[in-house]
Amino acid sequence: MTTFASAALFALLTIGMTSMSEAATFVYVSDAVDATIDAYVMDAKTGTLTSIGKAEAGKTVMPMAVAPDKGFLYAVVRSQPMRVLTYAIDGKSGALTQKATAPLPDSMPYVSTDRGGRFLFTASYGGDKVAVSPVDEDGLVTAGGDPGAADRPQCPFDPGGPHQPLRLFRHSRRQRGAAVRL
Image (cartoon, rainbow, N blue to C red; front, side, top):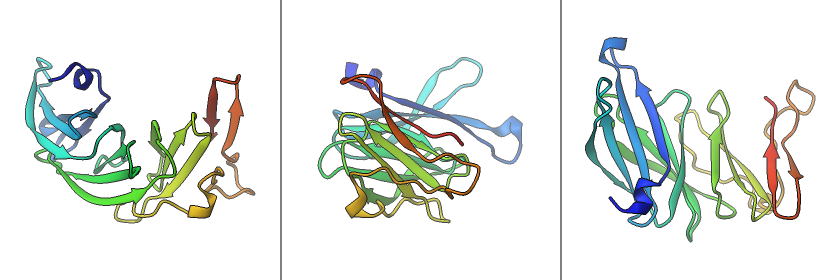
């Protein structure tokens, strides 16, 4: 494994099978240089990782997020064309199968989902962009939102509801951030 891959982002998750005693821990490592996501199963007693395969992604694939139901892995490709890939996670084997792709407005180094798994949040502090992509009822991200709004923060929350809107803030000329209170 390359040095870059060993320093790559990890996505750990436990997939419940028929009972907690049969749960498995799968580890996914984005390898931006090789344009793949390496998949492993982790031995819960020893921590040993055993390779279970690779999934093709795209150059500069990173970061990744797991859906709250642990059924999908979302991987951001930060090279042209910039996009997010949706992979279904096989609950028994941990294997990844690409199911969808959606455009992103910039190279987005940050990704997460809302607690309910209805929206995928991505941010590019260097590009001063925040994007909110809808996650459909099948768990797939297939649309990047309004292309005309790619340079503006988008807020999926009801302004009259209990949530505060997504807002950008700037700590200094070099530091930028995004905040959302759920």
